[in-house]
Each structure stands twice: as C-alpha cells, then as structure tokens.
Figure 1 (cartoon, helix red, strand yellow):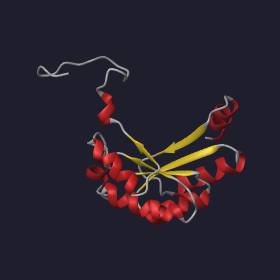
Figure 2 (cartoon, rainbow, N blue to C red; figure 1 turned 180 degrees about the vertical axis):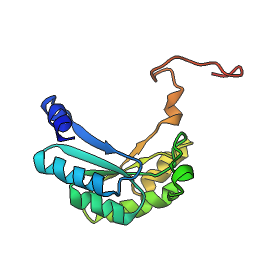
Figure 3 (cartoon, rainbow, N blue to C red; figure 1 turned 135 degrees about the vertical axis):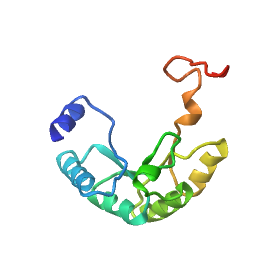
Figure 4 (cartoon, rainbow, N blue to C red; figure 1 turned 60 degrees about the horizontal axis):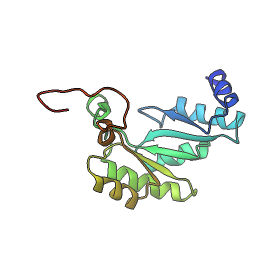
Length: 152
C-alpha cells in the first residue's frame, strides 16, 4: 500500500482518501497511521464510519477528516448485506460531536435524496456533503444518457 501512496504523493496530490465500507477496522486504522507517519504534510480523509468512537479512533490515528455514512447511499447495500448501519442524520450528529473535540471536519457521505437533506447534514455538523444520486443524471455528469421506460 505504501508504494502506491509514494507514487501519488510524488504526483503532488492534494489529498489522500481511504474509502471503505467499514472504516473502524484494524486495517484502516493501521493504514491511516502508516500514511500519516510517512507523509504528515498530506491531508488524509478516512472512512466510512457511523459512530463517535470510530470517529475518535480515526482522528487519533491521524485522519485530518472523517467520512461518515454506512449504508445510506442510493446504491449502497452494506446495511442489507452486513446488517449494520446507523441512520445517517444520527451518525452525522454523533460523529460531528466527537470530531469537534479535535477540531476535525466530517463529510456526510450518502443519504442525500432531496436538497433539504444537505441542509440537515450541515445542521447536524457536517462540514462537507457528498452527493451522488442527485447529480448522476445531470448533463454535467460523465456518461451517456440512458432512456428507460420513456424516461432518461
């Protein structure tokens, strides 16, 4: 893993993201520690998590920002397959509360179905909101338009 990190740091990336369905695991925590030890100057985002304890552990391992959300996205099956997850607004609030202890931002990742959901995520403590489904069908998004049952 560190060889890949060496290569992307040499390419002058702005940020490294460790993105996994279960960010509160030994492998992720060890990866965060290793990357921050080797490259303390590089911004590191890690996740995804859904609890305050997981948020604290990632921050203490060296994450500069934490992604929050296990299963809320429109295409995510983690909650159904793994049987775990926390409602997104609850996860964002709990994780943001923990992250404030360290002055570390969180990203609400998933569960945005309506524009009002962005406001709710920010009100719950997210500094950034990731949006997939709402933007996927726009003209600006890459890919070709697909017509299905008369709708694009």
